[in-house]
Length: 95
Image: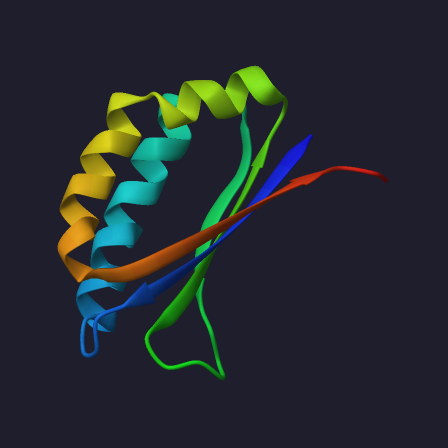
């Protein structure tokens, strides 16, 4: 399994709009790829305008399908104006 943790930093004041959009987008993205084990977003409690997107994929092929999917590209196009920066960290399951 592959775990992805993305830190998403928004432009100030964009949190409500981001949350509304990801609430609609994430179920569509999950449904588009059976290899997604977990795909959720959360607001950081101690960092203003900061969110974490935590994703788990059954294998590399599932992650590759997600990265190349129309669903992801569409969601990124909708969210991009709200995002100031993204940092993505990949992790391999050990237990």
